[in-house]
Image (cartoon, rainbow, N blue to C red):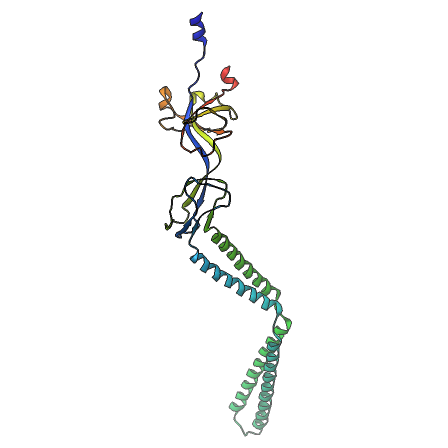
Length: 311
């Protein structure tokens, strides 16, 4: 009877092996500038918005001043178009037109006089032709001056104002983009968490796009590997106990996800007959992880099996 009971007893499945991880937040460099200040050390706990380090802002400050000047110039040009021509400019145009009309009248009188003299044969035809040409030139000049005065009196066209508004909007958008970029030269924590890594130190000049700060934030979870023979036994949402090296009591957790595609696993994740097989990576979220729990610790997880596995 004892042997029968022992043979029927099911052997407990081996624990799932893996490592402890935290959700990470990486802050990248907006520009390749030297680090001029570091306010925290690795391992420090920071709140959201806390300053971590600062980059040299002299270059971006010069760009900002240049862009502010462009915005001011575009705004002034728009105001000038909206207000129209000054009264002094209109008065000057009227005076110019009066002078052009007088010159036209003089040229016409000279042409008429030479025409009468030509009828009597006292001047050459060439003199009359030159007077005719001078009259046409004076008339054209007077017409151009009159058109210029009409343009000033009619005011600015709507299309010109719209173009000036578009130029101002573009300059303001560029300025806002630069201001946002400049604000990010002072690197702040996007979320509350613990500083895991500061790859660059005071005085270093990181390339654009490099990770300046790596934060451990959000949830702690165990990354484990499930052998193919046990994949059908686990369902998302299953309750688990996670054993972390250095902590006596197991930590309650929930199976968050299991990859649908198998992958090769680290040497420590599978043992025995499963060592050379593919496995599925799974994530088990801890309910209440202890504070300052470091990432990378070895873990073992025991999860409840599904009903179909029992059947």
